[in-house]
Length: 253
Image (tube, rainbow, N blue to C red; front, side, top):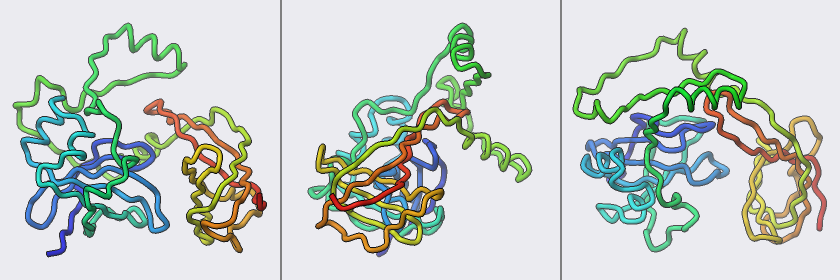
């Protein structure tokens, strides 16, 4: 039977859902972790989890890496999110023996439940020169209380979404990458390149302000030099930084 899951709640959001809960047509729960960008969309690694395993994760008894590295049912799956649609996601079996270590999260990741005093918040606010608000959405003292859900009206949801995605541009640098193009999509300008220098894979998009195009690029065999603008942005609400590579020129290396 093909397993179809749907998103139930986002646990970590950083320029899109990084980790979310889902359930399938039989009520089995899953944790789904964003692992890479593909030509189709964002790929998520998904692991079935019991209520006990979820509770252990939420109460710091097991970290995220162990959940994916040692799945309870000895099953892993992946799914691709296309155009931001998180409904009716088809799961594809992922053999554990073929799992890329790059897909596993770092050790020691738990859902953060910080306890922060007022002095710390004041210092953080002064250092960033903006108001800082810390929300305790799942405080440990309320773990035995009934869970309360409430829908956010559309007129409030859009401003909140825009606020969460507002960002400051910290700096822009020019970087050069030499390597082989692993994938490229002419229509969207999305690309992925494996560097000859360090063996790492880098992904980005064509700079919309330039005339550069991926047309005529040969995948996986030819060496290219990609000159990019590396843009570092800080999300205003979370304070997290994100790097973006914008391709401005291509030449054969």
